[in-house]
Length: 180
Image 1: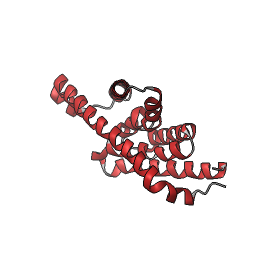
Image 2: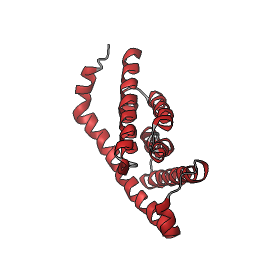
Image 3: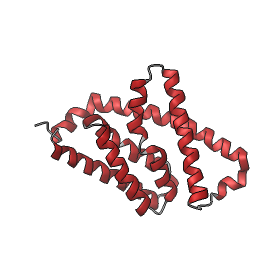
Image 4: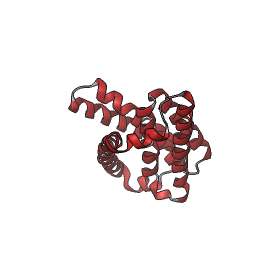
């Protein structure tokens, strides 16, 4: 793929990811789903260009989301996990041959990212999370457990999305961004 096509694809994916993130302002109950979707868009760049270009798009969307978005929690979830995970996932799966160990590492990364994101949200940014305070430690443990279940589903969906893209959509996509 020529550099002009790579740049065009990077701009399109960055714009789509940022637009997806901006929707969190209009639909606040999608604080986690939209950053996950915005991150999933980076899969195209990982497959068609490389991880470096996808990482540059991640950085651009992270920076702009943090500055522009009113929903700082959504921006932080994208920055802390959903934005880079679709780039990191294939690296983990390629380097670690044991499926069980791969899942353990992915879960550790997810949990560390979520805890770090909420520490930053609450203690650095000073955004109170009233719902968590009402339920105490048990509520936090329940939310983290539910988040882990959703993460497993997200990981499986990413895998299936990649397979669907490679088997059904890639040829059509490449006609748009012709290799010359």
